[in-house]
Length: 347
Image (cartoon, rainbow, N blue to C red):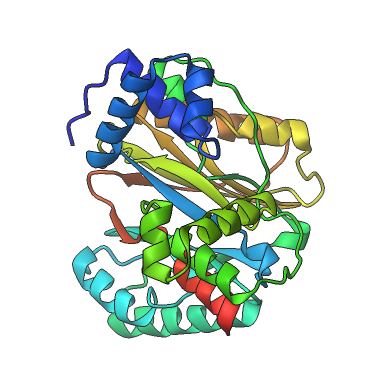
């Protein structure tokens, strides 16, 4: 897809909307020091063109969720992608736990939340049975990486601000916030549950329309929404359509560390480059998702990571790295957080 041509002001506003997604428009305007009329015009245009969209993310660790699971696989390239998608949508992607699934003809990965490993195990059993029956496996079973919230660090969760700052030539104001820290079960009444699910399912609705949809007064919706944010039960993010911005590659990294030399914080900071949009760590394992404007950017970043890991003796085996092309990959399940939130709240 041809890269959308953006003015400097459009890039600045886009960056601000992503970097300061939890702030109100007035605060973002003040930080960016732009005219309100220009800001609102650009914001409306970016969302209407599908270049930006907003999401509300439930803090599943506070409503009964225990872990984040990452599953990745190689597939038999002889089987067409559409045939695989048709089969997996009916048997696998229907699972409430899976919130994101991406595939190409010969590979794929998915991310899930769950209240326990049992549910993830059931999904994997169905996945293995389905893939085996259809002859989809290449040489190995799907690989899983489990990140229990109590012993893991979700350091970036689809944060595109650094990536775009670098791509747009803007100064980045970093303020990394960890995700899904620890576990607790926060009590919620029925109205709070309805507002939380309403925000997740309809992130574009204003308070008036959301109130009509869920049959709760607008004032109550606003009060509960602010309380959910204050209690860190929900967070708002803004994500760009990288394909429309002309990015070429999404890269998936799975790194298993040397058991005699796990990485320290300085090592992890070195591996987490500006291209990183997702990063989950355990003591001996990391999963990272990065995005690149060009193949050359991908190649340089990948080689620098491998060089650093080997020089520091942090790995005994090469990391597993899979390259996805935006113009070839298929988003099979696209940031569906409502299904798992509803399951955790009501089942």
